[in-house]
Length: 327
DNA sequence: CCAATTTGACCATT
DNA sequence: AATGGTCAAATTGG
Image 1 (cartoon, helix red, strand yellow):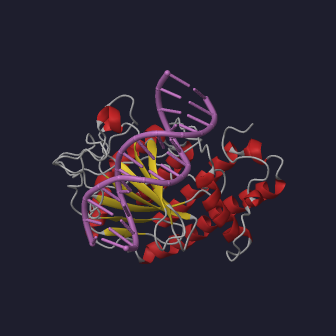
Image 2 (tube, chains in turn orange, cyan, brown):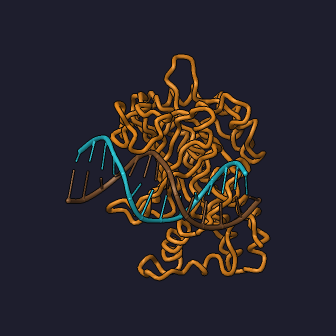
Image 3 (cartoon, chains in turn brown, purple, blue):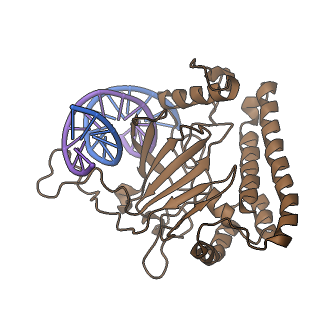
């Protein structure tokens, strides 16, 4: 069920994307058609699942969507918060969804809302998301104030080895239209501070830290990387917790700080990536190199069944940049 | 001018 | 030595 909701949300997002890029796509009937088809397909798929679910729920009142029962309990703890968040920031369509579906885990997943104290993992079906979080969140072994490069006198800033601690991994579908290269939106504003080719991976990994790191010493970071086997999905690894949301300049909702201390990095909707987010004042790719590479791969996957190696970016965006600031 | 991104270099860890 | 995470100069757009 939840993956169905996730699917519907995905459809909503696609529709939003289409609306945003309508001006760009207006003279591109081919792409416009593709976009519409995709949206239709997603919703049709969702509808099918819904009708199937109507049958299956009578037999299986609690589908085994989660690995462990505690996840279910945890989900129920989150829901009121999620509802508050949804009420404050989601589209009316999403609200409708919320009211229609008792289990709203999917929304939380689809928007990257994770809590680090989730012990096990969460897996969803096709079109859904995969969330995985390691247990303890003593992640902040690093000291953001130590920004000197070779100046580390006694306390050297660890540059690696934070791997397991407080790390939350999310998989989110990439946008199929518009800025397909932008990382999944999560409502926070991120500043890119690095990008690396990862051995054995087709796509580079991008490193982001919270935009408010300097102002509020917000230690939140994330890594975004396209999946090798599914270029339409991003794997996002969150590290650290947002502390910036206590201020008024920070994003709106506070999920992470719960009574008891164990908090998770929170995320929310709206675009936070480059060029297009309401929250992100980013100026978009200046060099376009980051964009070129993945989009070319995506274009290959889409139009050439993934075997070619030529740059076919124009197939997706002939003539213009896929950003909001055309012209 | 400021803020954001790119990118090569640096450096810690394995 | 290889790999991955971070820094910071250069660059660019608002």
